[in-house]
Amino acid sequence: MITPMRVFVLLFNARTENEGIHTIQVGARNKVLMFESEDDAARYALMLEAQDFPTPTVEAFDSEEIKEFCQSADYDWEIVPTDSGLAIPPEMNVEETDWNPESEENVAGETRSRNQESPEKPELSDSELESIRRKLEGLL
Image (tube, rainbow, N blue to C red; front, top):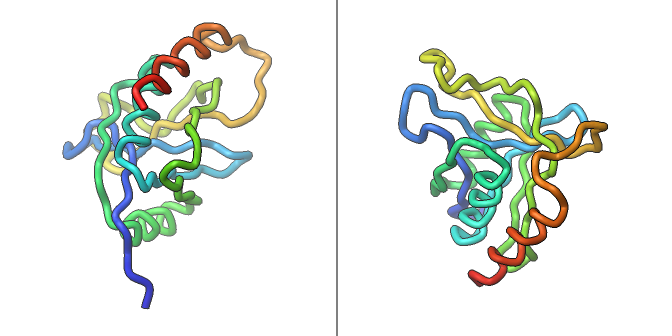
């Protein structure tokens, strides 16, 4: 039997009735990122904040629990190994999320990023993103 491992995911409104998990959109599929390193997850969360996302919370879970959630929600998942390089959120965000910060009913909602090109201009310029990336790498 494979021993489950502890992973870190990003949650919005953690431990509330309106909790949502961060996903990225790859094609038509949603994917939950499971970080092996809490520090890597925290850096990713900071980059999301820099893209004007609500502030996510880094939460530890058993990897099997996240996989079960993904299967029930028909989401994909990916484990981001420790020291695999800096994971960077997609530059474009989905305009409409399935998660509503004001909704009392949206327990398993999500906020996601788009992992595909869009004709819209990113909210941050490439130079701003590069500056943020350098600052975050400086935290290493």
